[in-house]
Image (cartoon, rainbow, N blue to C red; front, side, top):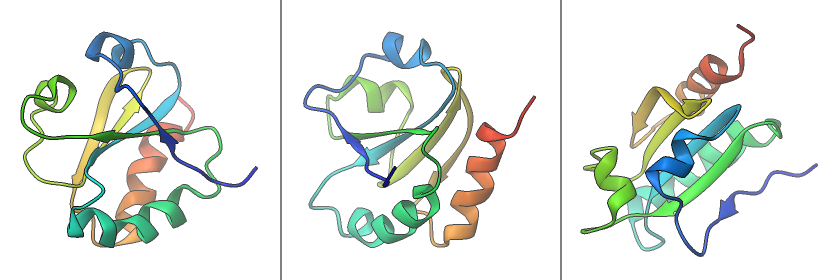
Length: 110
């Protein structure tokens, strides 16, 4: 199955995120953010063979409650979750390897 991010018309609530099962990546940013645009090829490459990982792209900004609940300050911020719990995060990732390492922490058995 080819990789694609799940773009959400309505961002999930924090309660919905906390109930997610399995591995997930929350990506906070905006379509116009140059840092976000620059990170997209790295993110897509790291996730392309990770069909079991939910990738939720959440537009962030002032007054957006989900981003505030995670104390997001810079874009893109990737929050790596296992069963709704934050395992790690990356702010403005610069290398595919750092994304792959964070993915391993949420997809490895046990």
